[in-house]
Structure formats: C-alpha cells, structure tokens
Length: 296
Image 1 (cartoon, helix red, strand yellow):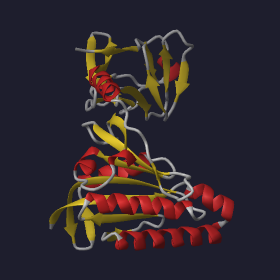
Image 2 (spheres, helix red, strand yellow):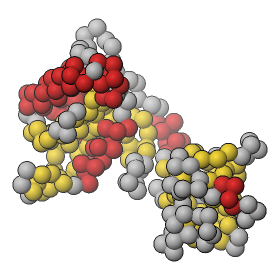
Image 3 (tube, helix red, strand yellow):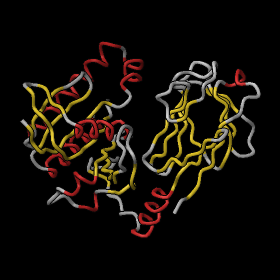
C-alpha cells in the first residue's frame, strides 16, 4: 500500500557518550524512557509509531503540522530530562509491506535527522509546503543542500528547541531573500575542473565521479598502487569534496599550502591543486589536477 505521509525520524544525540558517562544500566534506562516518551508524544499528535531501533523512533503523520508539533514536543521532552534529541522531517510517498515500511522519502528523513544538531529538527521544503497552521517565524531556512545519496539539492528548514524558560521553540528570522538567491546561484554554478594527462572533465553541482583502476570508474588510472575504486569527487551544496576510500591513501595539494596525506578520509577542495593517488607510492607519476570554478 502506497500513501503520502509526513515522516518523522527522531534520534538520541550522543548515545555513545551517554553510555560512557552514565554506565550501561543507567544509560539504557534513560534511553528506554526517552523513546517511550517519544512514542507517546507521536500518538498524542495523531501519529503512527512505526518502529524503533533502540534509540530512535520512526513515525508517520497524515499532516505536516502535526508532525512538526510532535517533533517540537519531543525536543522539549528530551531537554527536560538527561537525554538530548535531534530529528528529521520529510513529506513523501511510503510503501507498507506487512509491518515494514519502504521508500526514498524515509531515506531523506533519515539523512535530515543525521545532519541535525543536538536539540534541532531539520525538515525539507517538501514538508514545509504542506503546512497549514504552523507559524513560519518558527522555521529558519538554512539554504539548499544536497544530501548524501540524493542527487538534487533541497531547501532545508530548521526548528530548534532552545533553552527558553517555557521550553518552547526558538524563533528565527528568515534569511534575507537576496542572500538566499545569491547563495542558490553560487551553489548552482560551482563546479570542479579535473585534468589528468589527455583527459579533462567538469563535475557540476549534484554530480560525483569515482576515480580508480577499475574500468567502471569515471576516471580510470591503471596503476598498481591505485585501488580499484580509490576515491570519489563530488559537488554538493557548492562544496567540492574528495573522499578517499583506498588502502594506500592520497597526497593532495590545495593552493600554495604544503601537501598533505589522507587515507579513508574526506576533505573539501578549494581553489586549485593536485591529487596523487597512492601517496608516496605514486612517485613521479602524473597527478590529477583540479580547479574549483564558477560556470555559466
């Protein structure tokens, strides 16, 4: 069965630190009580509790307003105890198969939740478009972002449970329309220009290219010291990211700064520079060069 719903995924913030500071028994009790409280809040607001993986809850709501209200109450619930929370909200199609729930919309809600800070609720523009009675002054646009695994950027809004005396939701003034328009234009025009030997290509916003010795990679570097899929270069939200997933690592230069080595890490590329797959093992082999540009 396919239905359109508001999806809320709320999670305990810093659960690892909680267990270290309180011990397994006390921490597990705090988490259990918090999750139980979140389930009750969802029910009060007319939501459907779907499942919990121990320290989170996944809930569905027929309306966006009820989902936002539930999320705000969950943040307040956490703030009043010893456990902090964060959450993600999205609107979209979900598929029921027995007791299980599927759909890309759930993945987006999960991505938003993972990006949220402590005591923060992040929601998509799609969810906000379906609100009817929510005070828009309680929502703050933080611009367009490309979420991991999602090609198209989406505008994200924040609703935060702050330290007000009444435990209410902190209000934010909306970002100036001119700033948002300028930011959107900059993000859309950002690209990275890659060159290696006789090959060159521009990678634009929302795109990604893999680099390695495998023929399946977008840029094939057939050298023994290069892993099959050595790294990925992507442009998301106007930021160029280089993610090394190799065994030998990568040596990079950014501008005039000294070169540095990474392995299984992600860095932001700015300006122009070079990429040596395999680090010192690459010796004098030709390097990949890059330049972050603004295209028309």
